[in-house]
Length: 178
Image 1: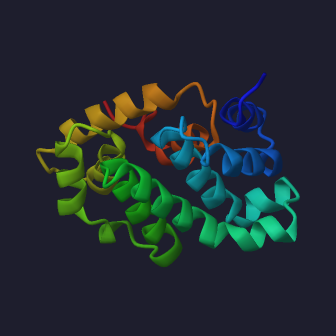
Image 2: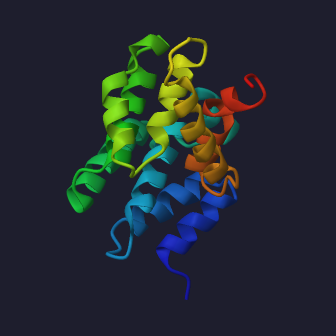
């Protein structure tokens, strides 16, 4: 028998967001669901918020209307279940940044450095590298190495979260710097 988590991951891998969201919603009620299940759902809601994505996948109005509460609400549920975690904090900060700001210089560098220092997530390195990639800051190479490790981890693109990170956000790492 297939579990709700396996169904969610299968639909996600097949890029079937409507079915994936429904299966993930069921999966996060399963006590066996880990933090990644919650993060995969939150990011799936987040990408469903994008007009190009929702038009391409012909998402129904009900799902489109659920995206805002879905992305942030799922992060809240993850925090309730797992407590504070740097991945939750980074995604919340990143989603706030994307939906509320447009200037890359607004990235909270200090917070990203604190999250990276926990050793529990590579995500802040992506933000820090993109923020400093054209600067002479001595930390730029350290940020690049962390971002490259992240890119290797998401290269398979099995979930929308991995595909999102692999596509636009880590693309700045590919071939534009020695």
